[in-house]
Image 1 (cartoon, rainbow, N blue to C red):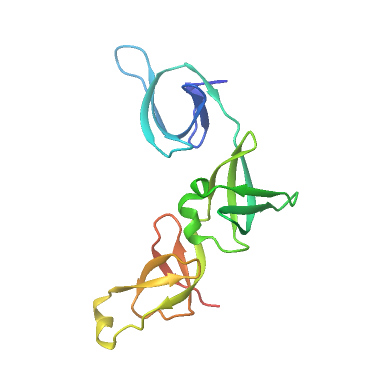
Image 2 (cartoon, rainbow, N blue to C red):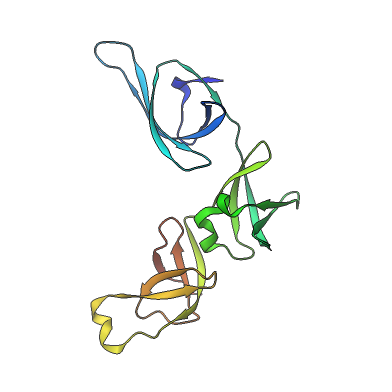
Length: 188
């Protein structure tokens, strides 16, 4: 248990019938008249839904202990993503709905942070940027280079993103995992 005065960004609360909510942002408000309160923005850990909720200052809230571990993506087992704990070598089967958009950037050997609550995976978080190889893209047309346009490119994961016209098949690029944007070439 904690009070609303102890809230921090990223803290996970157990509210309304055991649902898990992550604190996205919070603000302590002390109006000139009346009692102080805490205005929060909460994200449902399972559904991703974001709500605004206001608590009276000092209200007791139940916190949930979420275990975050760095795990390595090993392989696909049917529709499940299999991650390996790098410390214990235990394997964890994770459903596609838990992996979410991270699936677009996962290849064998990538490390990700898996958040777990009572042994159940809640979410998979990748680093802000990953390096992937272009599996296929059409060649850029010579006259198009001055416009700074983009063309579709299929990554080694099968996901398609927009890349600048000068990028060719087989090149390694850096991709933003939050937005899916091209960030630049990887030079070795």
